[in-house]
Amino acid sequence: MQELCHDLGALAGVQRQIAPDDLQNAQLRTIYAVLLQHAAQWQDTAFPHILQVVTEPSQEQILTEMALESCDPNPEARRQALHDYVTWIQQRPRAVEKRRVIEQIRSASGEQERDLLHAFQRLRQGEEVGLPGK
Image: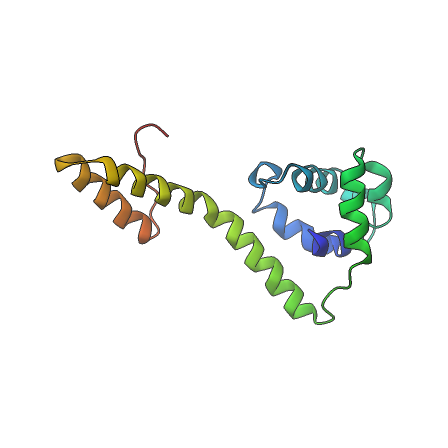
């Protein structure tokens, strides 16, 4: 989030891949939504403008810490860190689904266990699977 606030140019690529609802942390989800809503009004950086838009003191504190924290001087390292974070967010639903299948396997038997093992194998190979109770 810090990189996005400091470099609004990176926001265009990220917003095509990550929606605010993809973020689990409510504060960061709100900050990201504010960035998406107001970035076009700001030039290269969200600071200090975003501090005037957020409404919660906790969000203001998070943003102030981000603004004051130093960034890696290597732009390639920052881009790679942002890419890794986006990838992690995108892969999180599959990891949750894997854990859910493992829990179901532990309590299954017979044909159901075999079906769940096949589903788990497909998840390991990167395929989406539909499971009952999702």
